[in-house]
Image (cartoon, rainbow, N blue to C red; front, side):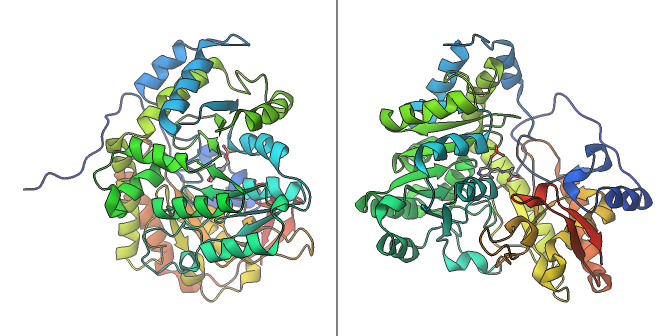
Length: 458
Ligand code: F0G
């Protein structure tokens, strides 16, 4: 018999979680103005809001915490992090930041100005927010295949070279400070970018004199997919693939809360000293001195260790197989989920789930609320609410995809939890025709509205 897949770790410490009753959840979600971000965590049974900072650290990471050096300047923890980053990514210069969006804030302060264009593959919301906050424009150049959730394509995060070159031809390069390659591409469904695409995007951008920046939150998962799906890399180690991926870029921003498996932290990696120096000024202003940048020494230690654990093949196999396990349970029951399954999450196609709901009633949000009511499972809307209003016309932007993302924290839940989540969503699927109305917005912020939006039932 072929031996089945099993987790590459065992559990040493547990945290209790509690189930609730439907009548309680009805009350709680109403009090939360139907915004899942407003729920208290103890009102949630299985929390798939995000895989960001919600993972379980290893015994080795916890022991590294005890060795943290809290010196203000030149801490040994800083050097531990610097060496790990250089070893894993190849970037010799780096700045610590407190998380990924802080890395974007610092780097874009040094690179992006009003009127600029920043092409990329479905920029993440904070990335786009930081671009638009500077009155610049994010131009989505993701391949069209990404927007058909039923299509089987191995690298739906890829950038369309023709779309990218059109941007280069249409605008002066002085207005294009960088191309952002998001690995994996969260907004398009945790979908990977192939090595070939990274190589070609880099060559094209550099030919026009444009820098390449990686938004690297899930870079190790991207490397895993390259190993599994790009035949030339089947026998190459994850670490070697990672080094090659980053070799095509000029800089990287990192939310270490994902593939470095820490609860908080981030950094920027730079190829050249000049850009590093320019960004250092902003790091000191916004984050902290350049050898801690908003992180404590203990956190830098855990991050350094996490970069090694996050790039182990067995760990990645465990993680991505768990995501696929949930995906398969749903797909087999006929629930419309994005295919192929992403690295960190299953994306439920809300437009196909609730085709009778008008887009003005926030389809994906309606589905996310139903899933919470059904089983106390918290996912997140990646749809019209998150897409926000057009900064110029202030009209709602209706994205191609209306998704509910079920993001799976690293090393945190068991496959029984996944089966519970699947059963909850399948129950909603079976009564989908009874969900007749959605929501209207009663309160929203001028930017990144999804975090604080208030809704009422229509
Ligand atoms: N880039 C990507 C691709 C991300 O997914 C995130 C965060 C960030 C940048 C920003 O990093 O949160 O550390 O400031 N994504 C989380 C999520 C929040 O739920 O997908 P951060």
